[in-house]
View 1 (tube, rainbow, N blue to C red):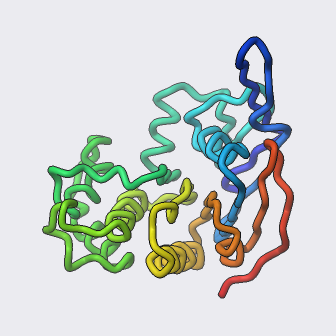
View 2: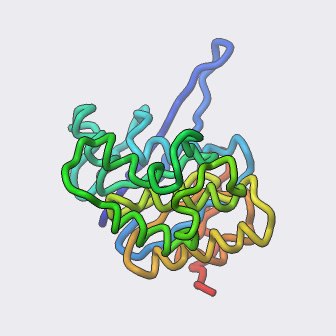
Amino acid sequence: MILEARCVKKEYRRGGRSFLALDGISLSAGEGDFICIVGRSGSGKSTLLNILAGLLTPTSGSVCFEGREYGSLNDRDMSEIRSGPLGYIMQGHGVLPNFTVLQNTLLPHVMAGRSGDVTETAMRLLEQVGIAPLAAQYPSSLSGGELRRVSIARALLSSPRLLIADEPTSDLDEETAEEIMRVFDSIAKKGTALLMVTHDMDFAAYGTRSYRMASGQLFEIKPGGRN
């Protein structure tokens, strides 16, 4: 397994009372898995993704990435994982306005201080997500769907084994959202494990496994099949 979470709980305190944002979540993802998690706002979806990406520490339970338990890793180790084998697409696009599409795509390579020219790889990824002709454009001239594709290409630059996406279609029209889902489907079919949360139940059909999240718990919907 690439990712395995066991009995993960996350407790918060509010107004002198404690509550569980996550209540004993267990989940695993292997090569080529496309896992969709649907649920309403406040159900714990983003909290779960932040824990699976190592950005948030669970109150109890464990998360392992490629056999390495997060609790045994320091900040540097986790940063190396997130800049390499684990890609994370947060809500919104996070594209920097003063950089071109290509420069935004290359940003993880530059920020990690890696050597070598990966421009060809970046252009191939932009081609994969359908925006290679926009490589020299700035974000101000792009649509919401195009900006989202930039964030996907950027997350794929380090050839992650697992790609995590938090509400990647939340602010897109229906047609563009479907296009993004087809891009994700193609990525998973090429072997990358993909874990996505969404509020849209219709997108669960894209998953090899799909779950509904409610009150901090996961409930499997059905095995699911690709279109």
